[in-house]
Length: 151
Image 1: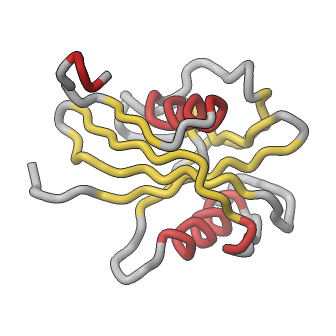
Image 2: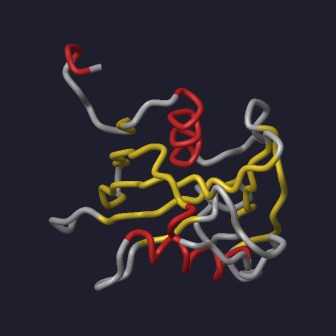
Image 3: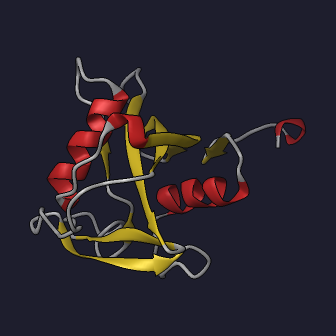
């Protein structure tokens, strides 16, 4: 496994108590047919805010002003066979445009779901970030073996 950590940005587009999710289309059966937040990796030389703005435009066709993004949760994630990553979850307080599926090769569709009645299956990574957002916790960990005193 490479000796690095990836940085991902996740977008919580929330309106009237509902969050926008995308249905993954993926060659990996672990993720295919599961719901996920609009998200992506931060590119080299790109700020996390620029990445969030880019991902919103690329994946769901909405335009964001970085000033309207609020960091609501940070999640340190690992899983067997996957590279460790740091996920930054941003709530978009405003956006322009109507969300649509702009990546049909990676996504079967997008839909709105009540924050307190999320669909199944929902990938664990965004689910943990959404739980952190709802609980108002700044930081969480997923997949790491921690000593009992750290939990």
